[in-house]
Image (cartoon, rainbow, N blue to C red; front, side, top):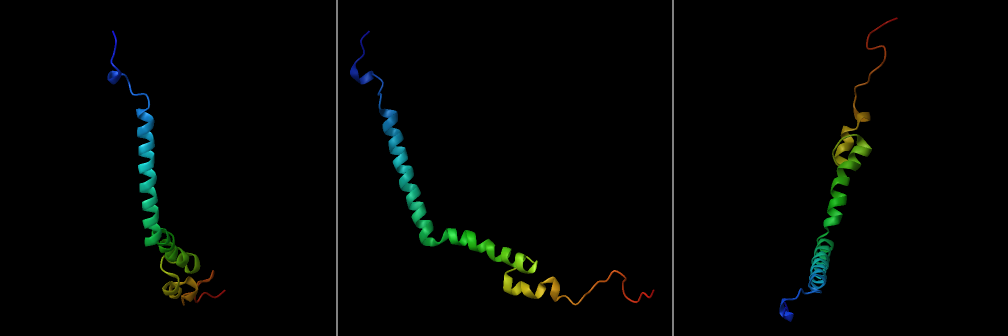
Length: 89
């Protein structure tokens, strides 16, 4: 049984489709990277949470550094001792 040339499997079709899909993926990835660079998205992802983290490192509270300074534990007027208040020995 002879097959005509049009019915034979197309040997390079999957290679061509893979190259086309790869090129579309590269184009979309480059457009997304360019947009995120122009919009400063990476900077916002890094610096946004860092503000609160910096406040926790410096002051011990989950607030930005400058407003959180007043809530630092050393700013508290309460002091504790091992003996307590008014105990005489």
